[in-house]
Length: 358
Image (cartoon, rainbow, N blue to C red):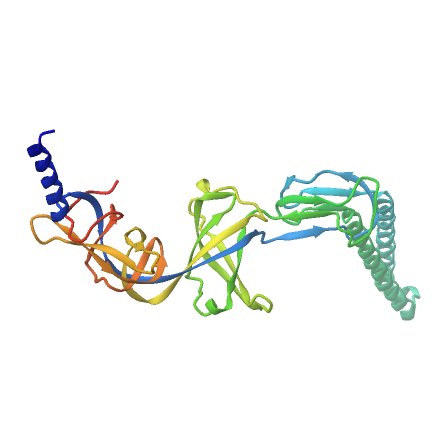
């Protein structure tokens, strides 16, 4: 290559380097004053509002099983039947006693009415009439007692059938056909799968800052790419003495249930609580921040003066991080334009061209 040509290329390179004439494309945003939010990341579990271990109210032999583990049931569905033959026979006997009592009471009322109509004109003493009145009262009381006994026996027969007290899924079956069961023995575990909650343990230092208006972003380990908006449903003001935490119960917003992921009790969940700090400050995108091993934190600020916009490096001090932005406590003002893309290799005073984002 001729000497003059090499010298020309070298001189152009020196001029570009010296003057920063390389027009670097960058994306920018404007630093703005906004409400500062404190974000708390917590882990928890999906829980059911209703979980019950079901049992019968009477003893007996399991004669029929209609469901198994994993089956979904509705309120009132039959889950199990005991052998109720003896109970039904006792009910038949009680009903017969009721019939007998009805006949006796009707006959006593008839005899009393006849005696009272005839009265002393036919030689029936007043004492005898009062005795018939007492007999009516006695027979009616006996009838009421037999009717109550029949209702009791009917209830016993009904209690030989175990029904679902609420809708849900059978998570565990604890009995088998032919087993003798006693009242209180656990036979099924039923778990409701509607209106599920997310239970999180939060540090005690955040207790005063939480309220039902605190927004929450929920994610499930089973669906890490999905985010569910939620709200604080209940704050249980009882601390765990060993961990110094308290329970925060969160419910998901149900406006878009069709696109919500399948959630089941027992799933692990993560939550981000967004607590309003009550103050505002200048904030920029996290992508604008450059952190160095020596502890320096900088941003590139665009100076629009001159023919082309140029950049200058600005030391900053950061505060809270929330919703993808970083609070700048020192170093930026509201309205400053900072580089968020293409800021990795910039130099002081370098000219840039501003391009739109993707």
